[in-house]
Image (cartoon, rainbow, N blue to C red; front, side, top):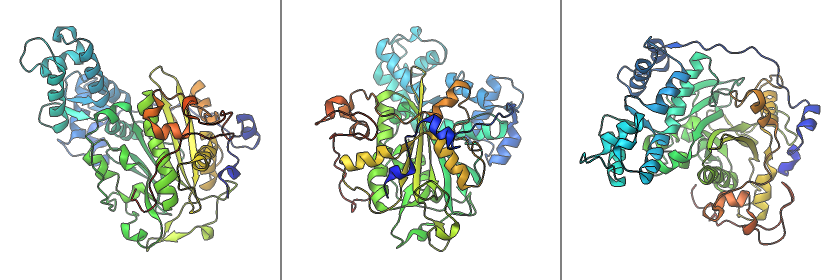
Length: 463
């Protein structure tokens, strides 16, 4: 079975004729501020926890009414007026600005407070070494200021938005399943299949630059927050990998790495998919974020459909383990990129979950990956059909409204501009740049000539 049998790459007009694009007119959501105490009880956030401290600090810097909204939290985190929390984006901005000017008096607002706090010898000059020492203390938890990784902040904002009726990139709408809020990701768990219907998280170039280089844990463990969680034993001798939905390599610190090994973040994947082409997509997206400076909102999940994208009856779905974990026929990943200049781009990958896939990083793997791409809206309606809801009922990025909503209907990018592409071999493998194509010239998504190759090792090498 070839991936392009799913009829990817069809134009928006063609998809509309097939009934695959449909956005019904809905009512405008009304934001309802959440009472902090009620919110914390519902989410299980204890008094004195980092979540409590952040909510209280945001409330005190805003309306001081004991309530909070996602917008209020976002505004607080972008400026940290009391310097209790600093995000990766702020740390990277401070680092860049210090490289331009080191006069403490030249910084204002939250940056002025950072400059004063980091100026260890109080000489009015902030050196890079002083800022690095201050940052290490923030990230190590030795000072009064805490590090709030962008990925962690996004998950908290998502949790709040789920209670305040605000649109949020990690809260896909119209999905059936059990909502699980974690510190670095949001999961909608398909309890009937013991698979995540979708795992959503944010990846920023600032988080990549500020990450603490966490080492892979390999401590797969059941999710205590989910009564229907699968267990590592379900996968024993099954022939399937425990395939990460939020990539372990996208973890910003040890806590995020540990969380990535929750079984609700796993779906059965063949080694030929999980360790090879899926790893290329994961790494390629991460490198695309690094190379372009874009923020990525990523959704990953499973499909149980045939080659034409039609839902499979339960009797035709393979199950493994004592819990009967369903094996998807396809794994998908969507990416919403928000570039520094403000423009946005959305794409989806839908990869077959089978054994006879390319295991070398050559032209055949590139064609498989690029042939797997489709408009996000087409995937949304495949998900809707799978769960028995009408076209247009699933919105993976509900925050895309107005003219931005059309991004989900756009055909996948045939080419991408990747600055310093030779430093980003996986991204350059998927979207070869002109100077890396050895023979011929790329004409389009399916018309590929020779391009760069990747050394992926062997299947025996653990992912």
